[in-house]
Structure formats: structure tokens, C-alpha cells
Amino acid sequence: MNDLDSLVQSARELFAQAATPTDLENAKAQFLGKSGRITELMKGLASLSVEEKKTRGAAINTAKQAVEAALAERRQALAEAELQRQLQAEALDVTLPGRQRGLGGLHPVSLTMERIEAIFGSMGFEVADGPEIESDWFNFTALNTPQDHPARSMHDTFYVEGGSERAPYLLRTHTSPMQIRHAVQHVKRHKALAGGSGEGLFSGDMPEIRVIAPGRTYRVDSDATHSPMFHQCEGLWIGENVSFKDLKFVFTDFCRAFFEFDDLVLRFRPSFFPFTEPSAEIDIQFQTGPLAGRWLEVAGSGQVHPNVVRNMGLDPEKYIGFAFGMGPDRLTMLRYGVNDLRLFFDGDIRFLSQFR
Image 1: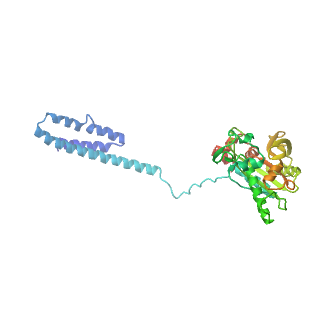
Image 2: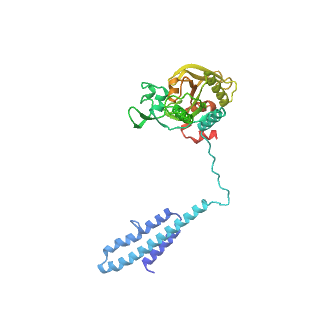
Image 3: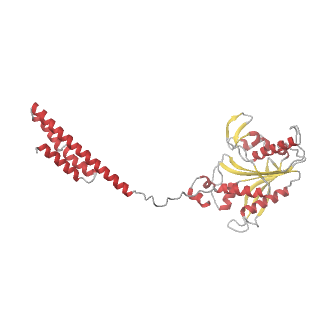
């Protein structure tokens, strides 16, 4: 065995002893590094004659290729050994039962909306739906809100592209437009049944309009008790003899059913809204619990303004009624004892999972 065969054999034996990739790289350096044995042999060619360089150089290259092949073989062996170790460590026992996917649940505000709909549904109220991008007429004009009202300011309302300067589009600031849309369709339908021409105010006989309008609304506002996107639920009852007394009875009954306190006390404070006259803020007072004795504002209400009744297509001399508007987000905060509205919209599973 010549010196080069012995060198290749030594490299194979040393590579075989390497137990880790690091050990293998250290062994490689002894043969193929800057000061390795093969590198030194290559440097020694400089002192040989031309013919000797050819013969000796070819032999050294053959030895170098053999060493590199042995190195690659050992690298592959170490990689396969590591893969087998990982596969054994991470092996799955397919005979074990799988992990069940956790069950989701309704958002607390959705739970509140369902509860509101169920309670008013038991009183004979329908549920209306409508677009979230609304026209100026349905959102403001039809509700007796004048052009110079602060709610029409760009600082308070999200306006969107489309429409015109005199008839812009916007993200609805309340769900009252759904009431108007529902009432207009209701009146058109019964005008047609009565054989009317579709023009002028309707003063014939028709079933009462009794509807709630829950949904998302948008205003430029954000803090612990306000959000740019929030929820509202408006209510409307129009008939030939619907009084403020009916409003007090219906809303009192609703609040006591929603909070499950039969001794809940309501207070109607005089206020102003463009679409009702007279108008009232509604406060509630718990007699027991952590909020006992405090007055808490939960809704606005009032007798529907005659101009709004006209915009529905009805004769205000014959038809009268009441409307109210409340925030399901606030009702949810009161019902579950949440003190920051933003928690409902942060998407924190730890918070939301409490309501499953």
C-alpha cells in the first residue's frame, strides 16, 4: 500500500469515528483544510519536474476524490441517522383518539341581539333589515333632520364615494333608516291592496306597523364607551291610537325581561330628538346588585314627529306612534358587567370564551 492509499484509508477510518456533523468537519480539516495532508501534498508538487508533476498530481487528485467521496458518504449517513432519531422522537400513535376541535360560541353582542329580538318578537314586533351604506334622504331628511344638523358634519359621519353633493351616500349613523324603509314598503303594499294610486298620504285602514331594526352603525367616535362601529336597535310602533303610555309599558316590560329584574325602575326624562315630539331619554335603576341605586341611561324615545309620519306616506292626522333607540353594546356591558366597550371588538379569545 503506497502513501496515498494509506492516507485515503486513514481518512475513511477517521470519518467513520465522527459521531456528529461537527466532529466530521473537524476530521475533514485534517485532510482537506488549508493545512490538511492533501493540501500539503499539492503544495509539494512545486519542487517536482514537469513529468513528475503530471504523474504525482494525477495520483493526488485521485486520492483527494476518494477522500471527498468518503466524506460525502459519512455526511449522508449522519443525516439519515438524525432523521431516524427525529422520526422516533416525534412518532405519532395513530391508535390514540384524536383531539377534538374546540366548540365556538356566539359573540356576546350577538347573544344580546338575539335576546332583544326574542323579547320584542313575543310582543308582536317584526325584525327589519336594510343597507349599511345609506342615502342622505333615508338617514337624515326623512327623519326630520335639517341640513345644518351637527350629525351631517364630516367630523361626525363617514361619507362614502357615490351620489352627489345634494344627495350623498354615507355609512348609516343609526338604524332608524330601516324603520322608514319598512314603513314605506308597508304603506305601499296596503295602498295597492286598497286600490290607491300610490300618490298622496294614506289614511285608509291598514295593520299597525310594529317593528324593531337591529344592526351595525357607524360614527366618528372612539373611547372606552364608544366605537367607530357599534350596534343599535331602533323600535317603531305606528297605529291609529298608539300613545306615550304604550311606549312606557312596552319598554318597561322589555327592560325587566332583558335584565331579569322584576323590580327594575324606569325614568323618562324630557329631551329632544329631531324625529320625535315629545322626546325622552330612558334611564333604568336596579334595586339590588352592584349597580343598585344608580340611574343609567339606556335609550332615547318619543312620539314620532308628524313630519316623519308624512315621510312614511301616512296621514299624521290619523296615524300616530312612538319610536325608541338603544345600544345593544351598552346593554351587553350592563348585563355582563363589562367596563370597556373595546373588549367586544379586540378579538381576544380569552375574553370571548367566557360567553360560550
